Length: 180
Ligand code: ATP
Ligand code: MG
Image (cartoon, rainbow, N blue to C red; front, side, top):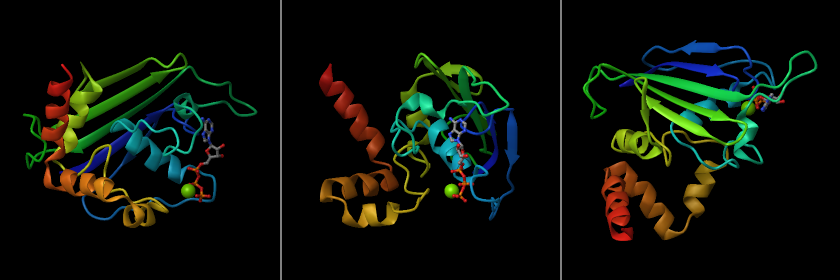
């Protein structure tokens, strides 16, 4: 499995629809300070279900929506689509290519899609949970994150390990069942 493309529409500084295409192997995103490199990484975590505005470097979740610049008015929604190559079947879904979309409106309404079909956040989390990527992902190690992992409480560190081992999905299901 590898990341094929990422499309941003109205996400942070990306007002006009912008598609980034990636190849297998190492990819680099380069650009001057403030050009949006970190916003691309934010888009990647956001589309996979990130729910902490703080880890997206904003105050509230709606801060991911393009806020306008001197020449451009603000937009009403942010949308990100991630396309993954799944020809090796890493993701438990019968498609060689999997696209995930997350959309958010100014009133806070949110939508998720898996291959164009409406989905719940939980579906997205389940789909990604055994793949090594996803919300509590340890594959995107941001600045300061390494220290956070090293300094985390034992139970937090356990969650990282459980996700890596593919156990977290079952724990979530168990907790959900117990709440009923
Ligand atoms: P550096 O090299 O300094 O790390 P960078 O390329 O990572 O820079 P980003 O942090 O991705 O840059 O982008 C910062 C820019 O994104 C700022 O100019 C900021 O104003 C803009 N930005 C962030 N959120 C929004 C938003 N909601 N609407 C419009 N612009 C935004
Ligand atoms: Mg940056």
